[in-house]
Length: 376
Image (cartoon, rainbow, N blue to C red; front, top):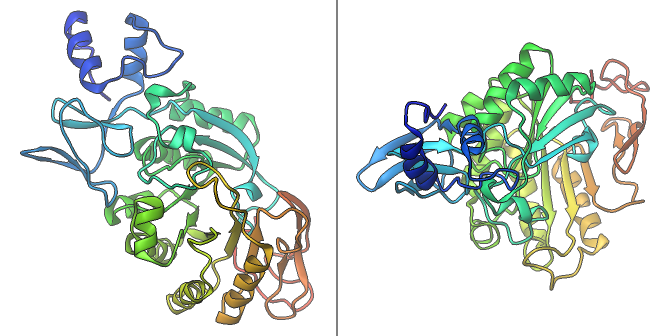
């Protein structure tokens, strides 16, 4: 943790708050000794960084920001204080809710269970279609936060009778240390840990993460590197690497492809994406085609035509992907899970609500086919 306590108060105010820009780490805090205590609590030295002549280089994600003293990285919550990188998104989520696991969405992971869901401000991408841009594109200094350290997070999860903690809403890569420490404590209490992530992360921190993560839902935003850059300020290959690593290390994986009109609705590109998934051993990973709704910087676009979503699903099934869903379309019968062998319905859903789970020990009750997933 950032040790400002060895400083006198004058030096702390001059160096600590000024250098981190953390005078208003939360709108709930005022410029006072009490706020100083909270800053100590909400700051932790970051993992995966190195020193360069131009500043501290963050190595969590492919952005690899070189951050000068007193400045922050592109994710808004990693700062350089005295030539070291600190996270100011530790234990201070700005979004805390209890959600059905289907809302993440996970369709093959503990269906019908509840996920204690948290997110802090900040994100290492800048998606023009982001629905949570009011928290993803700002710093923890600009949001109204809760004081929820890892031990308290686990306590509240148990008290709420939630089977998992979901690190979600913004981008858990940007609050990596908070997620990692919380996941370790949660594991000790038998609580599952799930990520809702864009997967734009470097290999070493990812592999370390996977030691305590049970499931990940990854946004595969496009199958074009050019579109990734223009739409999200990211890159395709690191995300493809992430998908393969999750599968390699046994983390349950589900994939979302948001179909954005004029951006990611090219059916030939979708076909290439689906064939890549199958060729790389991901045919059993559920694929969700989600409907785009105008938001943030793309309000001039229309919602995705349902016909495009249906065609994308047909392409995915024909390519060999076994479980394909359509999301963000209320009333459309494309959220149920069907057995790939006998085609009988084995899990029935309505929106984010589980209606019926017919599986018997993870298998189809009619033909005995094992349905990949974490069902208990």
